[in-house]
Amino acid sequence: MAPNPAAGRGKRRGRTERVDSRRLPLYTAGEIDVPFVVYGTDEVIARDTYWEEHSHPTHELLWNQRGASTARIGVRVWTITPSVGLWIPAGTLHSGWTPAGTWHHAAQFGIHAVPAIADTPVAVEVTPLLRLLLERLNTEDLAPDSRAKTEALVLDLLAPAPVELLLKIPESSLLAPIVSAVRADPADDTTLVAWAARLGVSGRTITRAFRAQTGLGFSQWLAVARVQHAITLLCGGEEIEEVAERVGYHSASAFGTVFRRVTGMSPGRFRAQ
Image (cartoon, rainbow, N blue to C red; front, side, top):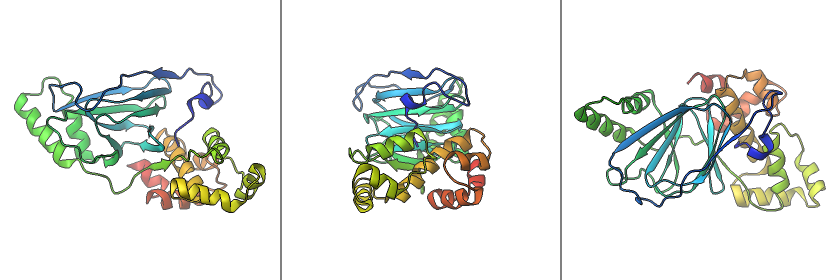
């Protein structure tokens, strides 16, 4: 799940660390006429970094060589990994969170030359071949003909992924305490019955509110939120047993069952990608 920058500020394995906040401009689609078809950048993030809401005049593909990060677009939080990237159409407002140590990549696509693969943000499968081609485009001395051929291959490979690592954040004031608690601590074990008593409503009311705003019931939403947070920990090199405990499961097998249900694969297979 996308970390809460305010809540997470200052704590990482018992140490106090600063969170960097980056501010980028707001652009409408095509506001700047860029001279490139595809332009890539990469950076190893030194500190936990929050990217304030911004937008680009170009389409953008986010992916990581190492680690997992998140991007928030409206009420949706997307997890970005080495195998699942995120396509953001030009002009789309988004913010982001990138943990320290993440090797972060971004590729910008000029809208004059590249039609959007989707009108809305969508997950993209970053295959080994696509990754190599994108990295090749970062080569400064790449000949124009070679660059054009590589760009054509990249565009041919871009397609929505079969699996999206996506969580919808309910905006209801009724559900706000639940969302805040889970964002602060994914292992929070407050039950639906306990939340209902605390909020002065029935469990059915909470479930209906979750379904109306996220398409998931309370337990399903909690599972996806925990798995999203777990992905960040797994990509950061944490052991599966430790990750299971940190996101609220008493055994690696129980965690594995939920992780497989949400992502379609086991935690071990996911980390090995």
